[in-house]
Image 1 (cartoon, rainbow, N blue to C red):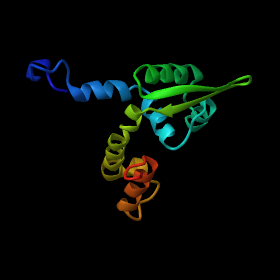
Image 2: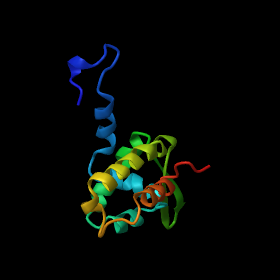
Image 3: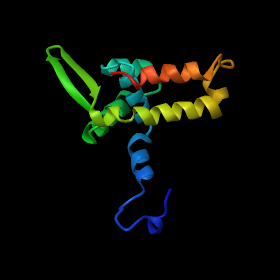
Image 4: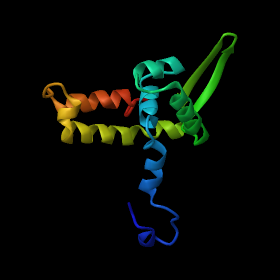
Amino acid sequence: MVDQADLPEHMRACPIEVAVGYIGKKWAVNIVRDLFVGKKRFSQFLHANPDLSTKMLSTRFKELEKEGFITKRVVSTNPIYIEYALTAKGRALNGILLELSVFSFRYCASEVYKRPPITLERDIELMRKVLKIGLK
């Protein structure tokens, strides 16, 4: 990242380092991605990420909520029914996630694809829809 000595006087920290500090924690980006695709319930996140433990999911939810990326809403107390959603701050990550996807399509294709893609543009457009970019 940018060396502290290279930062302009008015900056406290490298903005890239700050952003990665939030979304770079293990499982954080998976949770944000899953919220974009419509997952709302604790069990849905666990099902989508089999290696994610309940303890880690709880921890990441608390961190993401504290930092203002997601909200937690108690829908019912008996039985307990909780839903999670992205805040405006969380939804603002959509462009970043799209660019990460495009990077992976182009430069990490063997890890992303089972076989060569038909068209890269079609996959990029799919990600635009998933991340709700250009939709009203």
